[in-house]
Image (cartoon, rainbow, N blue to C red; front, side, top):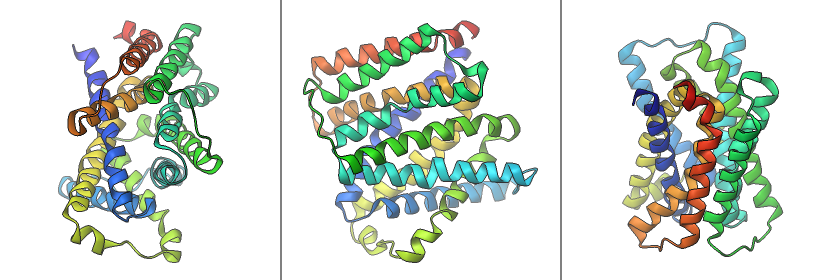
Length: 297
Protein backbone atom coordinates (compact mmCIF):
# COMPACT_ATOMS: atom_id res chain seq x y z
CA UNK A 1 0.00 0.00 0.00
CA UNK A 2 2.89 2.32 0.79
CA UNK A 3 4.18 2.15 -2.81
CA UNK A 4 0.78 3.28 -4.09
CA UNK A 5 0.37 6.18 -1.66
CA UNK A 6 2.24 8.75 -3.83
CA UNK A 7 -0.04 7.76 -6.75
CA UNK A 8 -3.13 8.36 -4.63
CA UNK A 9 -1.78 11.74 -3.54
CA UNK A 10 -0.96 12.66 -7.15
CA UNK A 11 -4.53 11.81 -8.19
CA UNK A 12 -6.01 13.96 -5.39
CA UNK A 13 -3.83 16.95 -6.35
CA UNK A 14 -4.76 16.64 -10.02
CA UNK A 15 -8.43 16.30 -9.06
CA UNK A 16 -8.22 19.59 -7.16
CA UNK A 17 -6.38 21.26 -10.03
CA UNK A 18 -9.08 19.99 -12.38
CA UNK A 19 -11.64 22.02 -10.43
CA UNK A 20 -9.61 25.22 -10.73
CA UNK A 21 -10.64 25.73 -14.37
CA UNK A 22 -14.17 26.36 -13.13
CA UNK A 23 -13.08 28.75 -10.36
CA UNK A 24 -10.71 30.63 -12.67
CA UNK A 25 -13.40 31.04 -15.32
CA UNK A 26 -15.77 32.48 -12.70
CA UNK A 27 -13.11 34.97 -11.61
CA UNK A 28 -12.48 35.99 -15.23
CA UNK A 29 -16.22 36.49 -15.73
CA UNK A 30 -16.29 38.49 -12.48
CA UNK A 31 -13.96 41.10 -13.95
CA UNK A 32 -10.49 39.98 -12.87
CA UNK A 33 -7.69 39.52 -15.39
CA UNK A 34 -5.41 36.49 -15.66
CA UNK A 35 -2.53 38.48 -14.11
CA UNK A 36 -4.68 39.66 -11.21
CA UNK A 37 -5.92 36.13 -10.48
CA UNK A 38 -2.36 34.80 -10.44
CA UNK A 39 -1.07 37.66 -8.26
CA UNK A 40 -3.84 37.41 -5.67
CA UNK A 41 -3.77 33.61 -5.35
CA UNK A 42 0.03 33.55 -5.03
CA UNK A 43 -0.01 36.35 -2.45
CA UNK A 44 -2.45 34.31 -0.35
CA UNK A 45 -0.33 31.17 -0.76
CA UNK A 46 2.97 32.93 -0.01
CA UNK A 47 1.70 34.69 3.13
CA UNK A 48 0.35 31.42 4.54
CA UNK A 49 3.56 29.56 3.77
CA UNK A 50 5.69 32.44 5.09
CA UNK A 51 3.93 32.29 8.46
CA UNK A 52 4.60 28.55 8.62
CA UNK A 53 8.29 29.03 7.76
CA UNK A 54 8.70 31.75 10.40
CA UNK A 55 7.21 29.47 13.05
CA UNK A 56 9.36 26.49 12.01
CA UNK A 57 12.56 28.49 11.38
CA UNK A 58 13.06 27.15 7.87
CA UNK A 59 16.09 28.41 5.92
CA UNK A 60 15.83 31.50 3.71
CA UNK A 61 18.47 31.21 1.00
CA UNK A 62 19.89 28.43 -1.15
CA UNK A 63 23.41 27.04 -0.77
CA UNK A 64 24.78 28.87 -3.83
CA UNK A 65 23.83 31.61 -6.27
CA UNK A 66 23.36 28.95 -8.97
CA UNK A 67 20.78 27.17 -6.81
CA UNK A 68 19.10 30.50 -6.11
CA UNK A 69 18.86 31.08 -9.87
CA UNK A 70 17.35 27.59 -10.17
CA UNK A 71 14.68 28.60 -7.65
CA UNK A 72 14.03 31.80 -9.59
CA UNK A 73 13.61 29.80 -12.81
CA UNK A 74 11.13 27.50 -11.06
CA UNK A 75 9.16 30.51 -9.87
CA UNK A 76 8.96 31.96 -13.38
CA UNK A 77 8.19 28.87 -15.49
CA UNK A 78 6.03 27.12 -12.88
CA UNK A 79 4.50 30.28 -11.47
CA UNK A 80 4.01 33.58 -13.26
CA UNK A 81 4.66 32.52 -16.86
CA UNK A 82 2.65 29.29 -16.64
CA UNK A 83 -0.44 30.83 -15.04
CA UNK A 84 -0.39 33.92 -17.24
CA UNK A 85 -0.21 31.89 -20.44
CA UNK A 86 -2.79 29.31 -19.34
CA UNK A 87 -5.33 31.83 -17.99
CA UNK A 88 -4.81 34.22 -20.90
CA UNK A 89 -5.34 31.41 -23.42
CA UNK A 90 -8.95 31.07 -22.25
CA UNK A 91 -9.57 34.68 -23.33
CA UNK A 92 -8.53 33.98 -26.95
CA UNK A 93 -9.49 30.36 -27.63
CA UNK A 94 -12.10 27.86 -26.54
CA UNK A 95 -11.97 26.03 -23.22
CA UNK A 96 -11.83 22.79 -25.26
CA UNK A 97 -8.66 23.83 -27.07
CA UNK A 98 -7.04 25.03 -23.85
CA UNK A 99 -7.93 21.84 -21.96
CA UNK A 100 -6.59 19.56 -24.70
CA UNK A 101 -3.33 21.43 -25.24
CA UNK A 102 -2.49 21.97 -21.55
CA UNK A 103 -3.41 18.39 -20.66
CA UNK A 104 -0.91 17.11 -23.23
CA UNK A 105 2.03 18.51 -21.26
CA UNK A 106 3.15 15.01 -20.10
CA UNK A 107 4.20 14.31 -23.72
CA UNK A 108 6.23 17.52 -23.76
CA UNK A 109 7.66 16.81 -20.32
CA UNK A 110 8.72 13.23 -21.08
CA UNK A 111 10.40 14.34 -24.32
CA UNK A 112 12.28 17.28 -22.74
CA UNK A 113 13.28 15.40 -19.58
CA UNK A 114 14.41 12.40 -21.62
CA UNK A 115 16.85 14.63 -23.54
CA UNK A 116 18.67 15.58 -20.34
CA UNK A 117 18.15 12.58 -18.03
CA UNK A 118 18.74 9.08 -19.43
CA UNK A 119 17.27 7.47 -16.31
CA UNK A 120 13.92 9.17 -17.03
CA UNK A 121 13.67 8.05 -20.67
CA UNK A 122 10.62 5.98 -21.53
CA UNK A 123 10.63 2.57 -23.19
CA UNK A 124 8.63 1.97 -26.36
CA UNK A 125 5.78 0.47 -24.33
CA UNK A 126 5.75 3.42 -21.94
CA UNK A 127 5.78 5.86 -24.86
CA UNK A 128 2.85 3.99 -26.40
CA UNK A 129 1.05 4.32 -23.05
CA UNK A 130 1.69 8.07 -23.01
CA UNK A 131 0.28 8.46 -26.53
CA UNK A 132 -2.74 6.31 -25.64
CA UNK A 133 -3.45 8.48 -22.60
CA UNK A 134 -3.09 11.60 -24.75
CA UNK A 135 -5.65 10.16 -27.20
CA UNK A 136 -7.95 9.53 -24.25
CA UNK A 137 -7.67 13.19 -23.24
CA UNK A 138 -8.75 14.27 -26.72
CA UNK A 139 -11.73 11.86 -26.66
CA UNK A 140 -12.83 13.10 -23.22
CA UNK A 141 -12.55 16.80 -24.04
CA UNK A 142 -14.05 16.61 -27.53
CA UNK A 143 -16.94 14.47 -26.19
CA UNK A 144 -17.92 13.15 -29.62
CA UNK A 145 -17.74 16.56 -31.34
CA UNK A 146 -14.47 16.22 -33.22
CA UNK A 147 -14.21 19.79 -34.44
CA UNK A 148 -11.50 22.18 -33.27
CA UNK A 149 -11.84 25.94 -33.68
CA UNK A 150 -8.31 27.15 -34.32
CA UNK A 151 -7.22 30.39 -32.67
CA UNK A 152 -3.51 31.04 -33.31
CA UNK A 153 -3.00 33.45 -30.40
CA UNK A 154 -4.96 31.45 -27.83
CA UNK A 155 -3.60 28.07 -28.94
CA UNK A 156 -0.04 29.44 -28.91
CA UNK A 157 -0.55 30.65 -25.33
CA UNK A 158 -1.86 27.22 -24.33
CA UNK A 159 1.19 25.54 -25.91
CA UNK A 160 3.42 28.03 -24.07
CA UNK A 161 1.76 27.01 -20.78
CA UNK A 162 2.35 23.37 -21.70
CA UNK A 163 6.03 24.03 -22.34
CA UNK A 164 6.36 25.97 -19.07
CA UNK A 165 5.03 23.05 -17.03
CA UNK A 166 7.36 20.65 -18.84
CA UNK A 167 10.36 22.86 -18.00
CA UNK A 168 9.14 23.21 -14.42
CA UNK A 169 9.00 19.42 -14.07
CA UNK A 170 12.52 19.07 -15.47
CA UNK A 171 14.03 21.80 -13.27
CA UNK A 172 12.40 20.26 -10.21
CA UNK A 173 14.65 17.18 -10.55
CA UNK A 174 17.89 18.89 -9.38
CA UNK A 175 15.97 21.08 -6.91
CA UNK A 176 14.35 18.08 -5.22
CA UNK A 177 17.73 16.35 -5.00
CA UNK A 178 19.17 19.13 -2.81
CA UNK A 179 16.34 20.91 -0.98
CA UNK A 180 13.23 20.08 1.03
CA UNK A 181 9.66 20.51 -0.18
CA UNK A 182 8.68 23.55 1.91
CA UNK A 183 11.80 25.52 0.98
CA UNK A 184 11.32 24.91 -2.76
CA UNK A 185 7.62 25.76 -2.67
CA UNK A 186 8.18 29.02 -0.78
CA UNK A 187 10.83 30.01 -3.33
CA UNK A 188 8.47 29.21 -6.22
CA UNK A 189 5.83 31.53 -4.77
CA UNK A 190 8.36 34.26 -3.97
CA UNK A 191 10.01 34.38 -7.38
CA UNK A 192 6.67 33.93 -9.10
CA UNK A 193 5.48 37.11 -7.41
CA UNK A 194 8.75 38.99 -7.95
CA UNK A 195 8.71 38.24 -11.68
CA UNK A 196 5.33 39.97 -11.92
CA UNK A 197 6.66 43.33 -10.68
CA UNK A 198 7.44 44.68 -14.21
CA UNK A 199 3.88 43.89 -15.27
CA UNK A 200 2.37 45.73 -12.31
CA UNK A 201 4.57 48.75 -12.87
CA UNK A 202 2.69 49.15 -16.16
CA UNK A 203 -0.70 47.79 -14.97
CA UNK A 204 -0.85 48.44 -11.19
CA UNK A 205 -4.58 47.75 -10.66
CA UNK A 206 -5.49 44.60 -8.69
CA UNK A 207 -9.27 45.21 -8.75
CA UNK A 208 -9.56 44.41 -5.05
CA UNK A 209 -12.88 46.28 -4.91
CA UNK A 210 -14.40 43.56 -7.12
CA UNK A 211 -13.21 40.86 -4.73
CA UNK A 212 -14.56 42.49 -1.58
CA UNK A 213 -17.89 43.49 -3.12
CA UNK A 214 -18.54 40.01 -4.53
CA UNK A 215 -18.16 37.37 -1.78
CA UNK A 216 -18.17 34.49 -4.29
CA UNK A 217 -15.01 35.92 -5.90
CA UNK A 218 -13.32 36.16 -2.50
CA UNK A 219 -14.14 32.54 -1.65
CA UNK A 220 -12.89 31.41 -5.07
CA UNK A 221 -9.59 33.23 -4.53
CA UNK A 222 -9.18 31.84 -1.01
CA UNK A 223 -9.65 28.32 -2.36
CA UNK A 224 -7.22 28.89 -5.24
CA UNK A 225 -4.63 30.48 -2.94
CA UNK A 226 -4.75 28.25 0.13
CA UNK A 227 -5.72 24.86 -1.31
CA UNK A 228 -5.00 24.78 -5.06
CA UNK A 229 -1.76 26.78 -4.70
CA UNK A 230 -0.16 26.40 -1.27
CA UNK A 231 -1.26 22.89 -0.29
CA UNK A 232 -1.20 21.45 -3.80
CA UNK A 233 2.20 22.91 -4.75
CA UNK A 234 3.67 21.58 -1.50
CA UNK A 235 2.18 18.17 -2.14
CA UNK A 236 3.11 18.11 -5.83
CA UNK A 237 6.76 18.86 -5.02
CA UNK A 238 6.73 15.84 -2.71
CA UNK A 239 5.03 13.71 -5.41
CA UNK A 240 7.70 14.68 -7.95
CA UNK A 241 10.36 13.55 -5.49
CA UNK A 242 8.61 10.24 -4.84
CA UNK A 243 7.53 9.23 -8.36
CA UNK A 244 9.97 11.08 -10.61
CA UNK A 245 9.10 13.93 -12.95
CA UNK A 246 7.84 11.88 -15.92
CA UNK A 247 5.55 9.51 -13.97
CA UNK A 248 4.16 12.30 -11.77
CA UNK A 249 3.48 14.57 -14.72
CA UNK A 250 1.53 11.79 -16.46
CA UNK A 251 -1.22 12.35 -13.90
CA UNK A 252 -1.98 15.64 -15.63
CA UNK A 253 -3.78 13.50 -18.22
CA UNK A 254 -6.53 13.10 -15.61
CA UNK A 255 -7.11 16.86 -15.42
CA UNK A 256 -10.01 17.03 -17.91
CA UNK A 257 -11.53 13.87 -16.39
CA UNK A 258 -11.68 15.42 -12.92
CA UNK A 259 -12.93 18.70 -14.39
CA UNK A 260 -15.88 16.97 -16.05
CA UNK A 261 -16.68 14.89 -12.93
CA UNK A 262 -16.59 18.10 -10.90
CA UNK A 263 -18.96 19.79 -13.36
CA UNK A 264 -21.27 16.72 -13.25
CA UNK A 265 -21.36 16.72 -9.43
CA UNK A 266 -21.93 20.47 -8.96
CA UNK A 267 -23.47 21.65 -12.21
CA UNK A 268 -25.42 18.58 -13.31
CA UNK A 269 -23.58 18.15 -16.62
CA UNK A 270 -24.01 14.75 -18.27
CA UNK A 271 -21.46 11.91 -18.30
CA UNK A 272 -21.37 10.48 -21.84
CA UNK A 273 -20.13 7.25 -23.39
CA UNK A 274 -17.29 9.23 -24.99
CA UNK A 275 -16.20 10.37 -21.53
CA UNK A 276 -16.12 6.78 -20.26
CA UNK A 277 -14.21 5.55 -23.34
CA UNK A 278 -11.67 8.38 -23.08
CA UNK A 279 -11.20 7.82 -19.37
CA UNK A 280 -10.48 4.11 -19.92
CA UNK A 281 -7.88 5.02 -22.57
CA UNK A 282 -6.25 7.47 -20.16
CA UNK A 283 -6.15 5.00 -17.27
CA UNK A 284 -4.76 2.13 -19.33
CA UNK A 285 -2.26 4.42 -21.05
CA UNK A 286 -1.07 5.68 -17.65
CA UNK A 287 -0.75 2.09 -16.44
CA UNK A 288 1.50 1.23 -19.39
CA UNK A 289 3.55 4.42 -18.94
CA UNK A 290 3.99 3.70 -15.22
CA UNK A 291 4.76 -0.04 -15.33
CA UNK A 292 8.48 0.39 -14.67
CA UNK A 293 7.85 2.42 -11.52
CA UNK A 294 5.17 0.07 -10.20
CA UNK A 295 7.42 -2.94 -10.71
CA UNK A 296 10.09 -1.24 -8.61
CA UNK A 297 7.56 -0.43 -5.87
